[in-house]
Amino acid sequence: MQKIGFITSSEDSHLTTDDLRVKEPLRKLGFELFPVSWDEFPISQGALQLPDNCAALVFRSCWNYHVKYLEFLSWLQILSAARIPVFNSIEISRWNLHKKYLLELEQKNIPVPRTFCLRGEDANFRDFFSQFLAKLPGAELVLKPAISMNGEDTFLLPKTDEKSLVESIQILQSKRGDVLVQEFLPEIQSVGELSFIFIDGQFSHALRKQAKAGEFRIHVEHGGRREAFQPSPFQIAQAEAIYKSIQEDLLFARVDVVERGDQLILLELEVIDPMLYFGIAPGAETRFAEAIAARIRENT
Image (tube, rainbow, N blue to C red):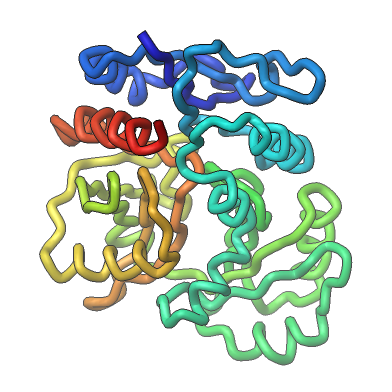
């Protein structure tokens, strides 16, 4: 029986409850699932020591790359020499690490929150104040690392105290590198965030994430909750347009948006290691397993 490795990390080295749902469908297709913790898996002479019968690797829960960014980039380089199918591709995963991709998608007419990226090595505060902050609507803004997840080091700040804002940005830069400053979308506190999951190029299912009272972060780590959500055909069409904007043949993706009026505004397009919430969509884990198997067949 061939093996398929789901890429995890030392902080979540075992397969998640969500990903364990894929184990039996893969077994029925002739594959054995096993975890590959990216930052503790054996490497010898610059190569991963994978089983000879390992047919593919799939990024799934490598949820500490944001605090080990340079190490993760080095590991991706090692992985690229493994000569084994990797899903999603190493190239698109590398692109997705840094949230400046939102600015690239904005150039493709994808609606995103107003965003300014302050690069750690050449933070341009003059442009930030004159071209961005002065034109930013609302009284608050969101401050976050450009390489981040789970709402860590993400803050909702008033935009009026420029001195304190610069100090906050500089502290975050010293700790986490490049920083994003974004328009705050109050809809996230009222209607929540919508997530559209795509498997093998097709819309699969959706959920709504809502923050607890008084919070703006919707993550479970900050008290958020999730529920299944049935989107309208119009909403699905908008999510598909966002998904297709990167023009990649993806095994999986999650499109996270906020609805403002009848328009979906992209918060994140997750193609590295998003939770796919198989538990709220019976049959999704089987479709995922079948898509993996089909791609392996295409590569043999």
